[in-house]
Image (cartoon, rainbow, N blue to C red; front, side, top):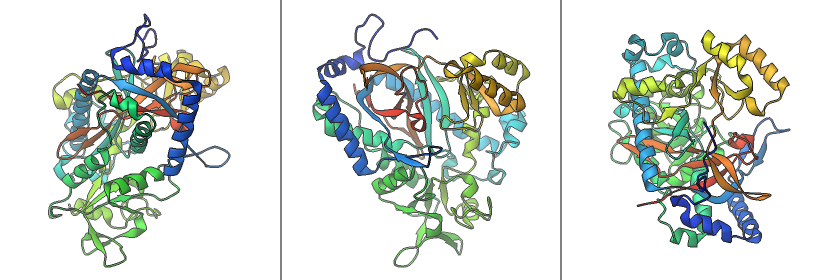
Length: 471
């Protein structure tokens, strides 16, 4: 992959166009300004309660996600190219989901092995033959993208179940506008703050027939112990909809209702932030206390819309990821505009042999893993870690995929030792209802440790504001 692409500086040290004014601004900030801004940002985030739970620490602890004040900047033309690729991919994923729960043409055409879908724990047989409103399964997708050069972007993964992180995108922007209003006066930065309004429009557009012109929407949360609970409360508040737990909702006489202080209110759309398994104890896990008994039957009958639809997880399963370029071509008739990271499937003996021989230079991930857990980053692992992982891989090869260590692009970041490049990725948020809406920017996550490629907040990563400049 060659040398690391620096998003602000060209190899000869000159400044890339989108960063023309940011570069001078960074140079003008003294250590005191930076420390003051970081302290203020921290107090803003604390006041808002933006924390996330870290599991596996001595006890689950609440932490602030570190915030970097140097924005990541895209030119309008770069962003346009990227959004065309994202939209193509998202349309193909929705077409794929419709197909595998209906005619299964892609399986019949032999483009994906049947067992990989039908024996997959993320495939929900209860969804077969069901038609969600407007044929949309994944209404909210977070596409994780990395950049490796001026023109090359790769998709790392598609988050189609219940993608999180949008509250950080919104709050990072709010903090930056508060801290550095003059910087915004010098740039035309596309707004992100209308995301909650766009989300609400998307949810209203997929309400079931008969819901009327003002459908009732609720956000269903597992409750305050969930690591993303702050985001659930924040989004419900921003959209002006009720935040509910399963016990606040009930099914009666063929409809879903929410308990209120007056009489119960009928509910049309449920933006759920709980997993498929817990949605309805009568259909899925009988012991689930998080869901609503009878909810799935209502959904089947077209009397309520669930966002995202159950069973969408099959589209972001890491075993399926390797086939997504075929999926895009199969449903759009076009070559994918956004490429996948080259990937070895460890259930293939040839691929497995290659991976076992090159463990020290590859990234190996669990097929169902998430959040940076259950993975091996070869170049930064000890000999013992590599050998332990080798044993796990041999014992259960089909549970893993492997990828090269990409030279992720780097962005200038404030560190203890001053401004230094740190690796970043990007999660744009895509909404699909009556049409596809992509928020300009997204969440940029930054690996704060020198040389680290792991940007997940649970593994010590931070975030920064993402700017898309308008023409």
